[in-house]
Length: 399
Ligand code: CTP
Image (cartoon, rainbow, N blue to C red):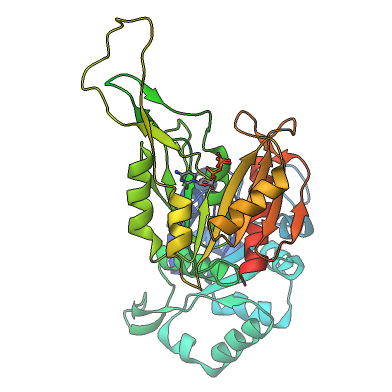
């Protein structure tokens, strides 16, 4: 969720400022870029050296850098950020944020930021309970800022109660939950098959195809980016898929793929079957390597189960399933026939007649056909952009 996000962390002068170090570390660990602005008073609580080392960026404090004489452009900072997080936020800075006072770089950046702003108050029990604090928190929320509520616990004064800044891990969880909230596939379970399968002939040889799994992995990442929880059933490939919302189940053969699909299908909302599954497998696997003897060797092949067709048969009214078709001739007619025969909601047609499309390429050119026979043609694109087109279409049709 936080991967590649640009986070602007504002640190104000609370004893909880020491937790900003852990917060920066967690943002970085999640794959975010972090820039830190500290108020001058916060420098007594945490050194900018710590925060710049952890964020791998210089920490900004003043409007004008005293060494270089350079102006720290607050408008540019506000535009750079995907989100601004003020943690810890003192009662003093909170009051200034409410009235639009602008006497330091943090406040100027806050006022010019166009991104969502999260704030995590930190103060003593009675300050937190004070009606003016409550009113200021409500005002900041009314402006559209997002509150990360303070927790209950021991405070610097020795008192016990509300006011303690949320723990860094809780701040990360709140932001992640907020980012997930508005995504179209949040709470949806998506199952994706990808990659080739290997069907053994003997202990060293197997039948396979040229699929790399790239398209299926791109679909898994795209679905996850849209908030889905993805089960990716991945055939043998050197490619990896890493995203917090994607669980990868590695399989080798068509029957192992079927087994994993069967395990997860009942809880699936959307199934995308992008794997190039072997249609046939040797009816017998020789235990040892087959030695050459005669001029020719016959290997008898038997049909594997058509996983997609089987799930098409099983699916209930709420489940949405998508198949792929790789055609060389009579493309549209064959794809439409497959859509109907396998009881699909949508089919993605790859035509091998298109240059730059298919197994061997980073690009693909697709046509999408839905159950109502609507046809959408797409340009030749990078597979990650194709994945976006496919997921957008699924979101549009399955709603
Ligand atoms: N599929 C599957 N299990 C199989 C074979 C195919 O799940 N044993 C799925 C693929 O993942 C893909 C679609 O079915 O979504 C492809 O259908 P298929 O009938 O195999 O079409 P083509 O590969 O295009 O081959 P053919 O035209 O020979 O049927």
